[in-house]
Image 1 (cartoon, rainbow, N blue to C red):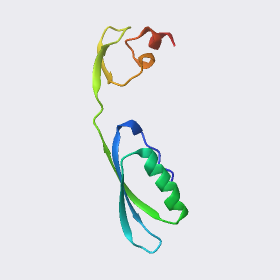
Image 2: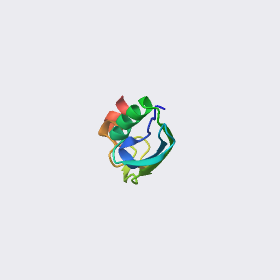
Image 3: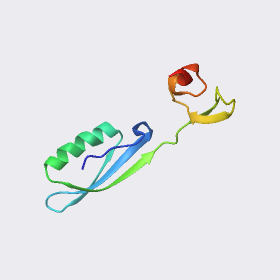
Length: 94
């Protein structure tokens, strides 16, 4: 089970519910996506069955910018790079 995460930067906690090859139910908590993915690779090699993932996300901070072409105010994530920001000339010249 190769898990892919959308917006991995917003994930604060991953709780994995799994069963061991002997049928014991276990739960493990991770605070980073990379730590979970390393663990996922190792347990699948051992034959564990990951039954459920609970993912907690932090709210995405938004900011208001003025679209350079239309002049309208729009909301974008606060950590948007300048080249991906519709308020920049770089965005419109790519």
